[in-house]
Length: 271
Length: 263
Image (tube, rainbow over all chains, first blue to last red):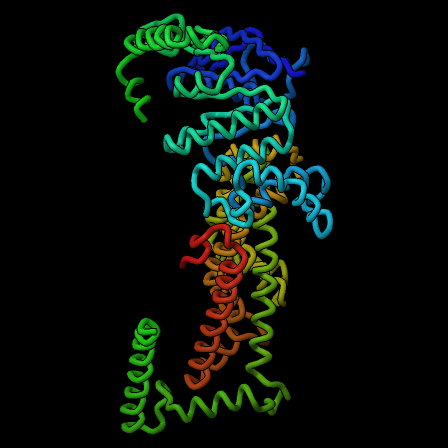
């Protein structure tokens, strides 16, 4: 059982308000896609869920308990980049979590124990199709293979919650579709609650059981950072019949909000 | 293969140029000391390396080499250890960074040779002052270079390690340390030049053995037949040390691909 709830979460950096009054309840085994324009605070919200940063206001609960103040093993993460350890081979990346557990002092296993740890990740290597690349270093892998490794590494920890920060953003479309299949299969096989930040609405619809959209509800043209974003749409994606209509509504909303943005912010987005 | 011939060409030209000039000078004045002939070099090398010194009963070259390398090794070894520990601490822990980083920056600006007299006064004229000079000379650079590298480790990697269950110590041993080791070796390689400089300088001023001592001792007899072989020998040793570190780097850090093999 994993239920995540955010209550009145807000975040700001100096005068720059990023999030305001974000409320969200996500149930067990949900796949919650978080969508919005660049700079709308969806990644900030993910970092708060991860405890990589603390919110200025509000609280986040997992199963009714406030979340730990530091990132920990109950929440796995895959970032767009730098998710795997470049100085470790594929198999070494995968046994790292076991090594952290079993060797508190140096985090390193030797001999029989190491062999056993390697055998225990064999099935995961196969699931993500990296058996042949087991002894390669990340820099020898393609972008898609690196992200598969990152997902496998996070899943082996068996986290209650998996957080994905645009994990497929840097991949080409073909690889991305392939990654979607692998991720969906792994998600169905486990009992995790997944949060995924995406800037691709189609991706959100394809993968999520739930789609939340972040945007600003108030706008001050003289002080563009005076108000933060909050959740403006929260859609359950079970009824596929409506999806076309829902998509159109979300796009409409976002394009309206785009036109209100000052020139330089649009330029930022292009980057 | 062709490139190794190309490498040899400038060396051959230099050697030929030297002995030509030496020959010209010696045919004008057989007692000229400035550019000794190959026979004189042979005799000097033989006397210093393969014959016991009549006064001390020691093989001078090897005693000098041993003394210098011991100082250099100790200086570089201690500097590396301090550089690694403080570099990781400063790069990883914000409190230590704000406390120590400015101090290290200021110390790195002190010209080490300017405080050599202070070292001689505090530590005496023995080994300690010479080793400390090397340490003061290269450690600030090592600390700054390594802490910079540690700070370049993406925050994502540290967060990821935490989500995999790593404690702070494991983040150091399994993430920070292996990530900075290649940089450590290249930083030590860059420090070899300054380390030799401080070694020779301190030996020149006060020592009873060592290559710098010997060179400056025989300078007053214009003994170029000793000085030049010593300089060549120091160069060979410096090259071998550098080569050794480069070899270790290339063998140990396959994960960096080509990056560890450059320079």
